[in-house]
Image (cartoon, rainbow, N blue to C red; front, side, top):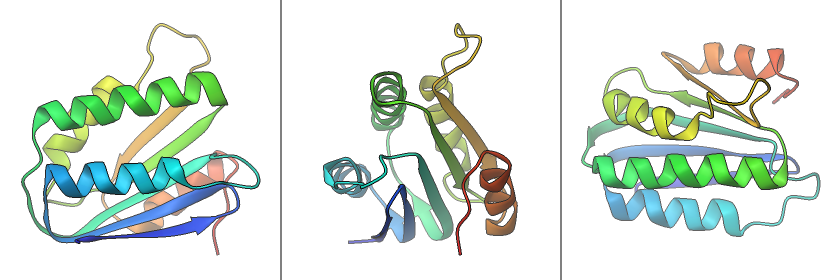
Length: 132
């Protein structure tokens, strides 16, 4: 298993390392959405900093993007920051295209792909999420 989920009352921090596969992404997504968040799932912070090879397919990235968008539309606003300095950045862009709802003037899901964790934390804070 190349990922770690750290749960908060209102969201999750998800870190990946080494090689990331479709199976890793789908398993982590099941854990993420299967958890009970006392304040609701308001944010995800996904960190790909320690990934050395990202082998996930575009099909999986599309599926995850659509799932995140649909979840936010039915469960309320969610912000997702992805730290993708190198490996996984192209696939993260594929995910983001499918996650965003550009037809809505006030979309339920806001996404941001950044180069480092401090940039992600600052963006989350701008959107009402403070992490220790």
